[in-house]
Image 1: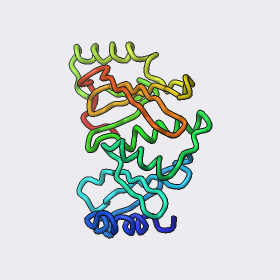
Image 2: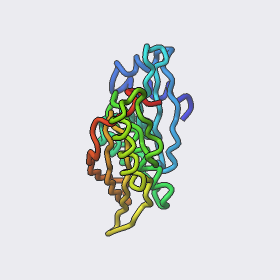
Image 3: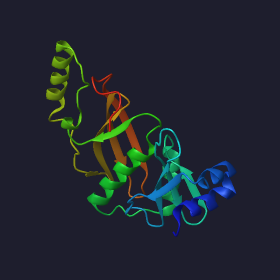
Image 4: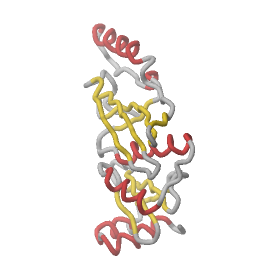
Length: 201
C-alpha cells in the first residue's frame, strides 16, 4: 500500500464520509504496525497530532475496500482476519497475533497496558504506610503469576494467558486461538483499584 493515510481516506470515502474527512486533516498521521501474521492486510496506528490530547487509535485494513476501526470492536478484528487471511504457523506468529489483538481491540479511552512482569507496575507517589504495605504485598502475590506464558496446543487450537492493566484493574485474559484466527477470550479481574499512578506512560 502506497500512502497509507491516503489509502484509508479512499476506502472510507466509500463507506463513511466523516472518516474520509478525518483522514484528510493535516494533523492526522497513519503508521503501519508490524503484523507479520496478516497475509493481505495490516493495521494502522492513527493519531491526530492536532488534537489537545493525541491518543492513538487503530484501523484494520485489507485489500482495496476494507477498513474498520478496531478499539472496542473485537468483531471488527475478526472481519479483518477474514478479509486479510492469516499465517499463524509458529508460536512467534501466534504470540504476536494475540498481543496485537488485545492491544488494538481494547476499549478507548480506557488505559490498557499489557504486562510480562509485575515489576512493570509502579506504586502511586505519596502512598501512606498502610497503602505501601498493601502494594508490597500485591507485588509479592503476583511475582510468579504475571508472565508471558508459552502458547499451548490443545484439541486443534492454541491457548495462552496474558495479563494487563485495564484502567486501574489487573485483568487476566485466557485466550484461545483457532488455526483460522478465530479468538475466544475469557476476562477475569484479579485485582481492582490498584495503588498505581492515574496515568501510565
